[in-house]
Image (tube, rainbow, N blue to C red; front, side):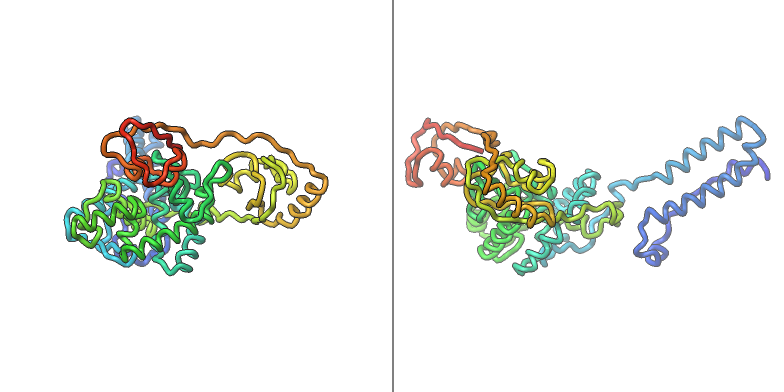
Length: 415
């Protein structure tokens, strides 16, 4: 074999579209690895005779070509290689992509999401853990399945997510809205971090918003900005759909972000995100018991000892707890799957022996703020600014809704 073979150009061609269709269901990474392996084998077979001659120039050429081949095998497509689908539908309503500003806004969220490669990977992994339950509740409420992507936009599917405005949990409720829709938010519990309870509240809230606006895009916008704001803007601007409505920038981007998330998550393999099933997170399994705590501030470790698990395990099964202690009264407690019977037997013995360990819980995470009233401000505008409810603002400051605010008055706010 002549030395001229060393200089031959090696090209790894991408499979054409007709071949791709025949390979449906097989990850693209597999075909790339097969192609790369074949090319590498041919290359080494043609190059080895030249390397064996010991010529330095031939060796350098081989190393250079190996480097080029490695770069081709490990090539990650440019973001620009990914395109929006020709038709985008969210909650059974099509996006008017023929409008340049709509397409531009959607592309912005699409590329921003894809650009943070680790984030969509974690969406897909967490979705395997949380989406089945969310989908079942949406089906029960007869609401669009696409609403599950709203939870991704809100929190990246993280139970402990917390926004600068004080919204907490996977569905990002502020305290007042959470309480209004049935969640317990106080010094002992914050059910905004309870996946099951907060999901139920989100279903009711979204259903109520749809009843108000009769449009899912507007309902989702109201979930972000508040129904009062969206309703007043619709009336003032005399329009009837989301794409014609001028809203705060965050809310204007909100629906586009949800749509971009749906595009990516509904077909991840098209965007280089095809993950093996064994790498996805599994839904957590646990038992739930309702018990009555007869003492003040019962140490949670008592419950862990009763079922023979670590304190950490029992604590992580109960993310709604604000401290390591359970308050007096009725309490819902999550336990490791299959341990509820064992726990209830142990709990009866603990009550008979009064083997209770109590203590002083740590202070809650809410920060105390002081707001000085400015000219023109009302209870409503201040509550909106800090993302709290008017009722909470009144309770903290011993006011009623009809109170007249004096300029310069200092209001206490917990957020």
